[in-house]
Image 1 (cartoon, one colour):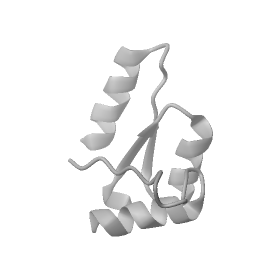
Image 2 (tube, one colour):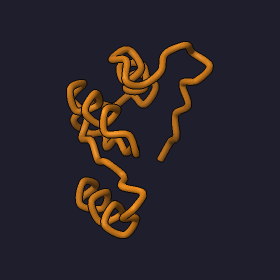
Image 3 (tube, one colour):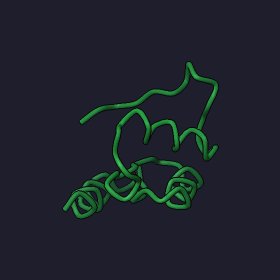
Image 4 (tube, one colour):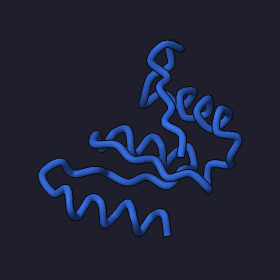
Length: 73
């Protein structure tokens, strides 16, 4: 699965345009994408953009991986 780095575009999380561009690059609808981040405000913004958001809690890596696996189905 691709990793998208938008740091050279001038669009950064949590700006809605960053998520929109990432979706365009993926060529997938928002509801088919799982977004993972360790910053809750970025996850909230992704959810507001229609993506499935998963917060990666760095103090609970195992639990975070479980949440990601669940989101991926």
